[in-house]
Image (cartoon, rainbow, N blue to C red; front, top):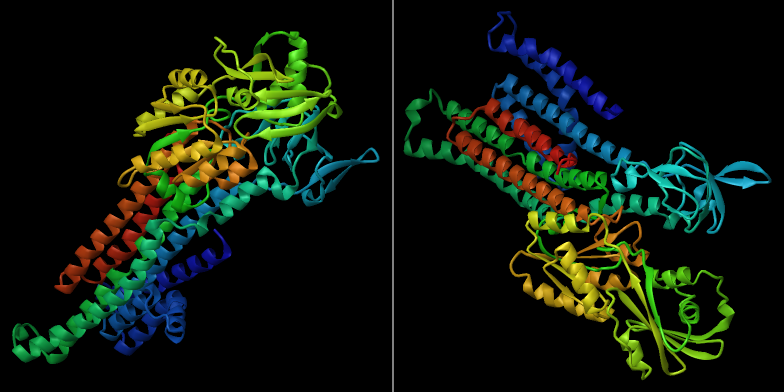
Length: 636
């Protein structure tokens, strides 16, 4: 509890200490002889103690031309009750309203603290070795390529590659997984992870502003600025609703008494003319207390905020509540293959060569691909095994969706798919192996092909099963790989459809075709990880990027980021979004339903100020408690 909340709690306790005996006296439960003026003055002590800030905000709102808010409603209603002689009820309304405000403030603060603790990944310093001594410097000052030292118990301050040491890393703040990850030399580590055992030497690969920890913090901090349709509706609703109920209360206070006095209908139920006005003005004040829209206005943004926090806790970063809302409507999901459904750990599994030797074929292919960081290129270089000399390569040209052309030791080399072979006028020979087939042409003649295979991600098959269980009607794989490879992967994981041999532009066209199939409120999500996936991620209703292995371009273009690249998290994210939307609808229906009923009861004189308090403060507390459930998603 912060100092502001403690101060409000102190005011509530002081006011309650004054209020309880005064209320017992005013209701003659306790008999004490006291002049009426003294009782009024004593009631003003708890009223002003607990409500002075509400009165001040109402006055400033009137002064600034922003009259119609909950402070104005509470001020008019409670002052009206006190003027009409209902001192106890007037003070009780203000007192219990502040109890509700304290509870709401604490609930919002708790959800923010949960997210802050979850996202407590910002490193305070980085260790750099200078003249044999370890110095702590600001992570902002560390340049790319520097060697930093991470001791046990410290956070990894910047993204990098381990160049020395072994350890276990706690990545729960990034991925939501509590199981430590064993790492050693050559492993990539992400900032925000916590080193648990050994000392690590890490060569940095990104500046602090571009590191994973900074990007995550930026995403979470900016998520609140992207509001959902429900939040925007509630904001507009409150701006229209509040003036309407004020005017209705004013009409309730004036029109029925005038009607009774003119027509004489029902006038016999009142002792005096003043009693008529007092009765209907009190009904109007009760009407104002009940009409306060706090429960809806507070609980809806809190539900989305808690939903984003719960998703973050599960290793799913949602960039805004609007994306969380759209995700709940997804019924079709399109996937990239490499790095999304498969690991992206390509290995050379077969080499078919003719007329040159196997080693020579692999050497030409590896040299042509030596400037590329694509997983297939890296697998060729790894299979070759020897150190490559880039100086042997010239006139290199990468052709998107085809492959690479280059001169290697003066020879014209083309490496790529069948489209590349057609481009250079060479007939590619078919291969019976299932995998990615890399064809090689040398000096305008076919030299052979290399088969590269990829492994499925461990959870890929279960991910598709869970998506179907979550109500996803169609799962489609869009890949640039050969049809045979795509067909095999689609069958293994249980996809409903696939499209193969697609160029990046073809993927966009395929997504646009799928979007046309999404009628009504159905939405399409695309899941990818590569640079060439960025346009498709932007084009889909919801773009989901793999955060650990995914490219910066893909993560930037996506609306949702999976921090551990686990496709199983997609179904979990959908379930979280739907739980959040269910809670939002529950709160809207419950709060408005109770209020409308109580407003009708107040208008006909059945509901008094105590019912008004329940309809306002009670409903708000229940709605906030319901909203906080969005934080707890472990068992989804």
